[in-house]
Image (cartoon, rainbow, N blue to C red; front, side, top):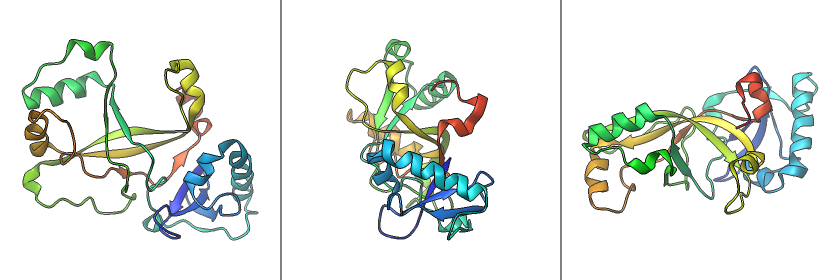
Length: 214
């Protein structure tokens, strides 16, 4: 199942279900007004959304329309939390080398993460704006995972059960700002502007054999 959000109805958008071919969609407001509302009651909303998706695939969804990705916000236009983790060793090594710092020994045992801004994400066709290109604007292609409420201290195996949706994104960085910012000892803020997202988020089953348990 694929879901997205139209740029209408407020800052959290309007929830839609999208067909597998990414050509048609239908508003899912009969189930939940926004994706966040659906996530808040996923066990109740998901079966209804899946039924709507099946109707859309069968060309039986009432009110379906041709999908225009320029009308889409990020699938989840804003979120309660945004945590970015680095797991690709080559990328971590290259970025740290560019900043002139060594790989910490703890990288191999402790998660490398930062908590970024989640108040406003960028849609799939929206401009990624920067005040000055001298800031060294860059982006990294990443996989995004949308979860429900994950308890503290949960095991990795149990945490997999809280994965609801998967998407892809561009994590934007201002490389020349980050160097001086991290030198102050607090962490990312000015150097990490809003993140840009793909048009839709999908349930893990949409990935077929490419999904290996999270």
